[in-house]
Length: 334
Image 1: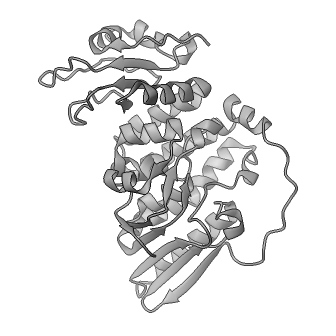
Image 2: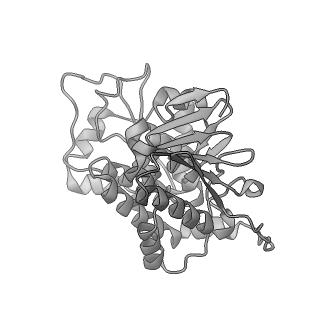
Image 3: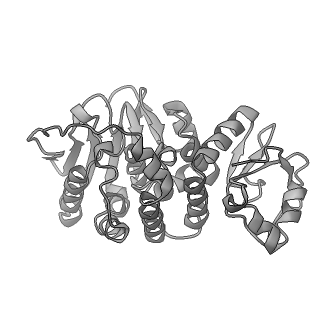
C-alpha cells in the first residue's frame, strides 16, 4: 500500500471533504488508510466543519497542544509530536481495516447510550474476527498444547458483612479473561443485582496483576460471527458492572490490559496501585476492544485519547491514567 505521508492543512482537508466523491477517495480502498493534518492556524472563533466524513482515521498534529474544546470534533486522534504521529500511522498502516472500524465505532459510540454502544462494539468485533487482518495474526501463533486448568473457580465470590468481594482467580494465567471467567463474573454480579442486602462490591484480581487481557488460547474459536455476537450481548459483564456501578469499586494492580481496564472503567470508583499500567492491544491483532472498552473508557478519557491508546497499544502508566480520569485514585496498598 502506498501512503501519502505529507500532512494536509485543515483548510485543505475541509475543502476535500466538501465533495462526496473526494471524501470517498479518502479511504483504504484508494490507498489512503489515514489522513494526517496539522492544526496550525486553527481559528478558534470559526470552528471547522465538514459535510462528509471520511471512513479512515483523521490524525491531527498540534504543537503546542491544542485545547480539546476547540479541536474540530471530526478529528479522531490528536498528537503533539511527529514521533507520536508515527506510532499512530504505523499502527493504522499495519491494520487499516481494524483501525477504520475502531474510529468509526468511537464516533458512533460518542453519540449513543451504553446499550447502543455495546451492541455496536459487539458487531464490529464479531465482524473483524472473520476478517483477513485477524486471521493473519492468528496464523503467526504457534499451536500451544492444552493446559489442564486448576479446579479452583475462575472468580472467587465472598460475602463480607453487607458486601461482596469478587476476585479474578487465574493467577497462573495472569487472570486472562476467558469464557469461564466471564461466566463466573456474571454470576457474581447477578448475585449483587438480586440481593439488595449486599450494599456494595469490590472487584479485584489474585496474583501479580489484575488482568492481562483476553485469553489468547481462546482467540480464533468463534466460527459463527452471528452466534459470537449473540453470546457477547446476552452475557455481558460490562453491562452488569455499568448497571451496578454505584455499588462497585474496582482495585487494580500490575497489568491491566484489554478487558483488564475495559471492564473496570464501567465501575463507579477505581483504585489503582502504583504499579498498575494500562494497554489496549486489540487493533494490533486486527480487532477492536471487545469487552466494552469503546463504551466504558470513552466518557472517562475522551475519544482522542482512547483512539490513541487503542490504535497504538501504547502503555499508559498509573499517573497518566489518573490525570486523564481513567482511574479515580492511586493508592500505595490495596
